[in-house]
Image 1 (cartoon, rainbow, N blue to C red):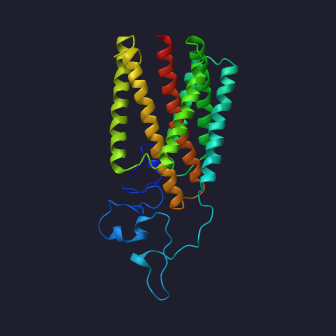
Image 2 (tube, one colour):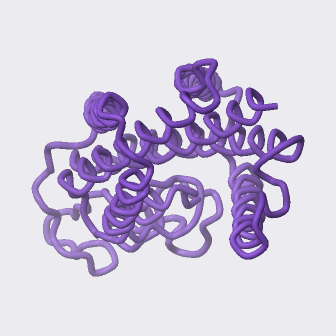
Image 3 (tube, rainbow, N blue to C red):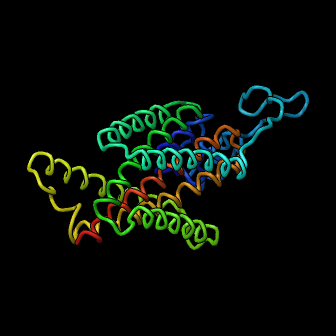
Length: 289
């Protein structure tokens, strides 16, 4: 299955269906939906598999000779370390933007730059730590400035509440995923993707109405509807976290290269930023009513 996270979906770190295009352009091992000869050939399904042949025998399906065993495979420690560095960059720049009282104009510019850097990394074939950390730095400036503004405008410590809410969601999803309370299946993936597409489309329509008609558009960002969509946004973010955990688990299981841990960190950071922003918006609505 492809990840809903665009970072992972381009890298092929998936076990449960769909063609992996990030490393070998082949379907991956353990695909219960594969059919035909590829389904019975582990070398045609695992993008990290090394093929071997007995002396004097041709290589399977005309494959080239096996390369020497590769070292430097991704581990959970690599993912944790890179995620810590990426999130640490976000936190440091956010704190600096808060302390320096960065204006909303600068915050919007930083958000646009972060968006550009994120899209560049998403469409690259390899992880670029410079791009990822650049995204984290500019995203942190935006988050720090907007959090400072809302904390001053709404009050009641909404920024710290949003941080605690994000941490609680991360811990809860990780616990439920490890305990297999949440099972990332093909049906789960389809449901999350359908819900996410509908959510994004509605938010886009609301934004267009707000721009051209003024006010709050269709009301999806305030009042009762705003609260409902805020909760939905947090729930969807939690579902994306489960999908991200699945992709990391599969990447480690199939021996993804160590540099892929930067992409894992990038994908997790994108999801956590989304959850934080949804919490920030939800708490702002609740505290302003």
